[in-house]
Length: 395
Image (cartoon, rainbow, N blue to C red; front, side, top):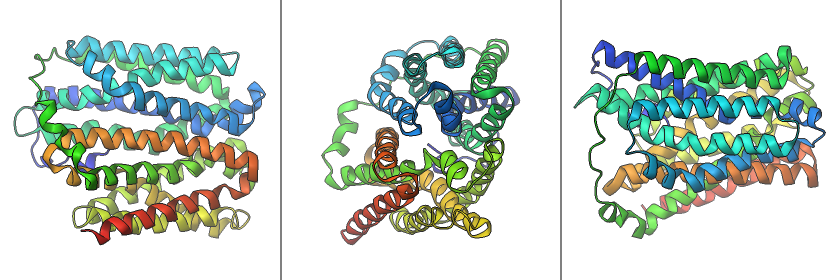
């Protein structure tokens, strides 16, 4: 899911027109990823407006992730042979329509339908945009191209989600969805004007040959570890806006700035991941999980002490962001015989973890209260540490 795992060709520059087209794919990635995760910053406002509990509204995150996990592989396989330019334009139009539906939704059920529609289209975009970027760049430049497309993910976390939350303070949460719908429509128009037609997708490798990694117990263990890691991450992160507003007393119209700070700090996590992942991604996973556990566990007791709270959020933010590329590298190394399939399965495991984390976080809030959420997430991180150490002991 991140650029650091795919930047092997970073030193090579593509042709100018290809660079523009790849940039459009990156902007498209920014729009679709922001659509997926913007709701995290809107949960408190959305829940109040629709008369829901924050825990109940948080299940929209679970719905999105489960939809991506279940429908992503078959939908991508079905739609990937289509001509790419109209496919990408169609996907952005679907996202624009889904965001409009979110903006006007009078109830949780219609809002859930809009999120379900967007979730169907998201994995198709990511499953085809990387391949198309490689085609646009040409042979020997695929890594550079794919890394640029995946910059959209980092930009969505650092800028998209916080800016959407800040906008909601001015125009309401519905207004944020209207703005996002406009962005998706704009990107679709830019793609219509500037994205070139791409050649037919080359024949894929034999699926049976790639499936050999599914018989490798060590590889399956790495995939399951990713699911557990993302469960720990999203048990708390799904409700970070609510934590900041209710526990730390951050005014609703300032939560977006705090989320942006969390994202900017996360850029340090990307830099850290690039330094430690190649040496031993499993050891890096353990280190980052320790940081994650400390950060998440410390937020509630330090919520009223601003300086110490910021320290805890820095630990949390760095570890959170770094675990995205580190998990991708770790699983792809474990499935070296079929890295494309390995990377796809890691994305599925991550979405399974996101769904489980959002659901578990909602249950924890209802049963134990918001103040206990960090401890529950910390406990899951500790379980992931134990699992990683057991894997490390067998290497």
